[in-house]
Length: 314
Image 1 (tube, helix red, strand yellow):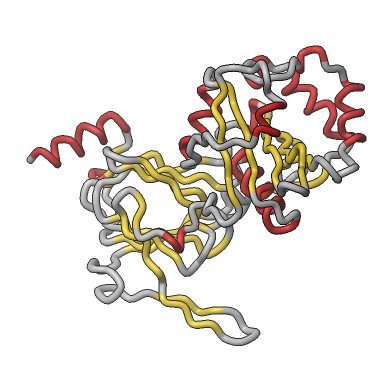
Image 2 (cartoon, helix red, strand yellow; image 1 turned 135 degrees about the vertical axis):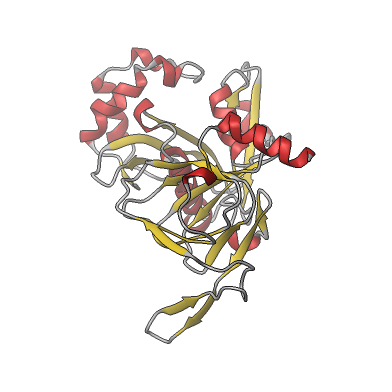
């Protein structure tokens, strides 16, 4: 997946989400009245990026999946408003999160903004779950200039990101995720010749390696995993590409992006895991403490929660 400028060929699929009530139900504007001509005019208008920036988030095959925007760019206050919308087909596949982080990078790194704001209706539970999941907290310090544009609108929840905030949840700044250790894999750089990364059993972690496997050739937007292990210990790392890892230990659920081959996640307890491929052909490697044993798997989430509860009580 990637961002690019909107093109006229995107208009039909843009109109698709505009007329999809599941997408637009809690949006401020009434998109149901928009026509294909309206979508085309919007795209043509987007070529001027002085006050607004709009990008298409597309698949690796260049299929339009949604639009992400910086609106009301104010160079005086170094602020802007953020918005993202994706087609129903693109939901839960990582497009919205990818588009958001890429556009925030553009806002802070290229446009040199200091703050980005956005709001959602408190009835838009899907959007609130999305932002809360990524640890964006509600803000009560919104400039009056921004609030004025929403005069008359009630029941809004405001969010913000400031320059320097770790909105990506940078893996190198974390020691653990859902109780699992974030491991820095030893890495030796060579000038103009890349890097060599390595780990050693019993030195970098406590278990011996009996099996190594890797998952590859996975289409972007695909989710895998959906299981936990009773006794197996594993080291997970991504030598190529970008994968979102979601871990749930029965008490807390956290996610992290694996896109650095020198970083691994050590799972040495029963933890439910899900993996979302954010880039096509990303590779997930796993070093495991034991041979394959189907009896060690827990493939039902309710059974996992019950197993963890009983384990903690015993």
